[in-house]
Length: 258
Ligand code: SF4
Ligand code: SF4
Image 1 (cartoon, rainbow, N blue to C red):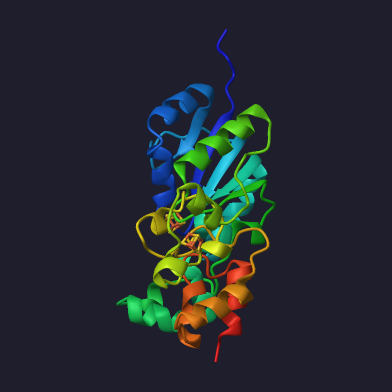
Image 2: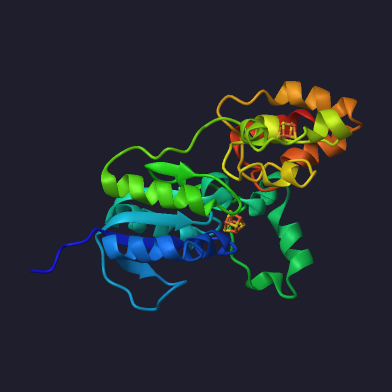
């Protein structure tokens, strides 16, 4: 008799698809995962689709339209566990820059026919709309952390994704600190681990792709960044990139609003 495998569904909201590509990038691991689960819905990989309910839903992207807001409720109803993947889904993504501006002005600059655009004034995380069982950070997510997270849910345990900062990964990699050594501004001290300190390993400062770590001391980091020459505009902008609407980064950027 055929073994009943848990049903996995992957959903896209407002996003660039980069996090779904990270799932496809898992290659060898994906084949093993595919052996353990039934991939019931994953339009980036296949147009075949199986109706819900689903055991595990991975959700990429933020809520930016009324249609998104209604659809995520349906996804939640059909999913036993729901995990959000990436900065768009966990913090509203780069598109959350609209939350600090007038979205109609942006639309008029970007689109030839802005009157065709029906959109909300904000871009928000999935957890602002429905209960989320686990959030996996990053822009894009780490394939290593994704495989760990899916494996953990299949095994009924908590995923091991450390809440500490990029600085810890940077020290483990044996890097010279770019802030101390070169005077290069770096968001590593307040940013969630996961990338393996990719940018500092190439002598660049961290850009905060993984969003705020647990209990980040952003006001203290801002003092150090201003000593390295960042003015108020630069401080506001440095927190407003991939995770502009994550609470700690949003609040710190607003402290440097004129
Ligand atoms: S988090 Fe980054 S990589 Fe993932 S979908 Fe959003 S913009 Fe793309
Ligand atoms: S380079 Fe950045 S991430 Fe690495 S230790 Fe220094 S401040 Fe932390």
